[in-house]
Image 1 (cartoon, helix red, strand yellow):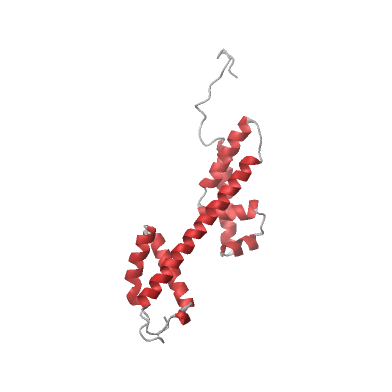
Image 2 (image 1 turned 60 degrees about the vertical axis):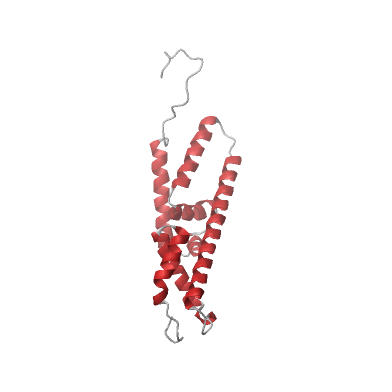
Length: 181
């Protein structure tokens, strides 16, 4: 990629890489990110390219492996989130109102954008320092702090709103209907 290797034309392969990435992820933005990740890995591992081999095949292989890595990472993250959700549900044997409210809050947490949810989870649940959480996510500390602040702000707004939606499926049983407060 530095032009020293003869026949190492990465720029000529960009269109094919983009097409392949788009066919793998079916989202133009994710496809661009995947191509970018693959090119970074190719640059880092340029020394592994065998002279005379097909640059296209080598790059396609790197792109494919980057895609598989992303899928594994996403599945692992989903398993961690599911496990955290199961622990939360199992550890709160509360009354109905509290249980309903907790479920709503849990749903609000999982409705946060992924970057905010990850940051808040590491800081608030895993109790990592801002520095440790930023290193874990590979982002600057300021970015992490901003994501945590936005996540907390969204959850605070949810808390102040009372409930996500009014409960309409419950009815009063055994009352006359005249004893409203």
